[in-house]
Length: 337
Length: 240
Ligand SMILES: Nc1ncnc2c1ncn2[C@@H]1O[C@H](COP(=O)(O)OP(=O)(O)OP(=O)(O)O)[C@@H](O)[C@H]1O
Ligand SMILES: [Mg+2]
Image 1: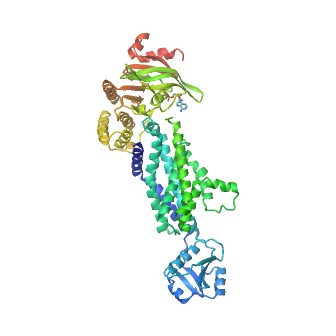
Image 2: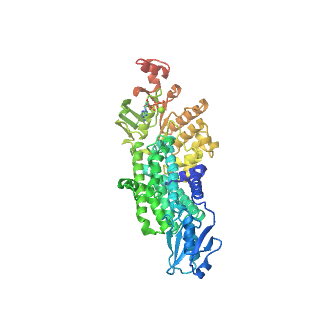
Image 3: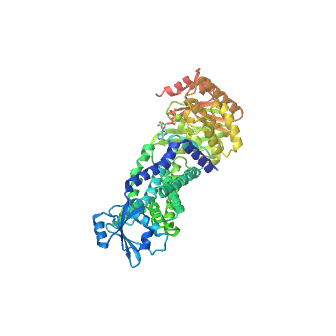
């Protein structure tokens, strides 16, 4: 099976080319860590005011995780207004109500994390969350984390996949290959397979790193995160190999980045798109990262299951099939058969 | 004798420029066929048509009677391109193993052939060395080895001896003669005159036209000169 031969060769090349492996695995982790440090660097102890909180609840609160202050409602509201405390926990009609200060993008998520771990022991009614300033329900890094995981995987797989397929042409091996009985689709599938195996490993490492080490907010199923990340990588790979057909050299391939990669970031949910003109929103709809990021946010922030993300999954598979088919077609330029 | 390759009224244009004009000849089974011509004459272009990677703007190419490109015929020839097409980070062994596996050769057969062809091109000592550490001539020889891997009945070589020293060049030609004795057809392009003499038949290519085609001795005899160089000058020099 020629597809298998190509796959094996690509994996062997990976083994020799430690630098590209590092670029695809270490670079996303490094950049994610940097983002995390920038967005999530608040290491001050949290200060939370407790207003009329029942004693037995107060006993459940862990002294190490935050500083708990017993205040009256007016004192607490004044402190919130002045930004002296990070949040206020009230008891209203037997249910907890949390008011987050909200001007710092990251503390809200942290307070919720601390409280939900404290409450998880007893059967407490659902906690309501309000914001003194702003309305965001998660920390900034929690919110952009899923998008960033998707984006960095997409970005680095696009570059490495595109460049290695391009090199096949610049070093003359593509022409040489097409003078053997290999079929065009066997070559393209070989690339998908070889890189595919590699990107599965990459997806697992990067997702695990973000979720378990950087502790990006995550309520959903880890397996779904891997699936979506992998599909996104596959889309990036098929797009990269397709576009490499339209580049004469590595430099020209890099020129595609501001054209096809950067705009995807704008529509991926890092910035609100609701207010945009409908034709602008339509642009977002033709971009793979929009769907990948939407699915990842669904899983990680809202704990969505298969039902919630299957549409995005189908679209990503559709993109991969489309780009792959176009690539097989584009290779006709080098051999009509 | 049967024709293994037939070129029928081939013309090629690149960007409205005529590169090849009405080329028509057959290559017979079992001969060493040389394509001799100066740089830019269109040798590589013609070779690409023989391998099926370039479809001529006009005319057809047949291999064993079947019009190419055809996946069936792709199995039948071995090709060595003008520029080395090798995977730099892989070893010589891995390169040959990969190309061999594209022809559905079994693992043991590949192994046996790898040591045979590496012996032929005198690279046995460098089996497990990455290609990026090879010298230019070594890469050239490895490319030749890759073309011979699957024991094809037709071998198409685009300037196989460029960058190879005279001693080694001699041994490669001896190898080609040995292959010919086994009944293998060899198409070779060159712009080296003394190599041209070693071919059974020779096509002189100049500015996209075949200006003469015959055995080297008959080419010389017809116009009464002593070397192929003079033959070339005779046909080419007049309308320069
Ligand atoms: N893809 C292409 N596009 C445009 N012109 C081309 C292309 N390929 C070849 N040519 C032109 O065709 C002519 C013949 O090129 P070719 O490579 O066949 O020469 P050659 O005889 O092999 O020369 P050399 O001995 O230097 O290898 C040249 O003028 C070259 O510029
Ligand atoms: Mg040439």
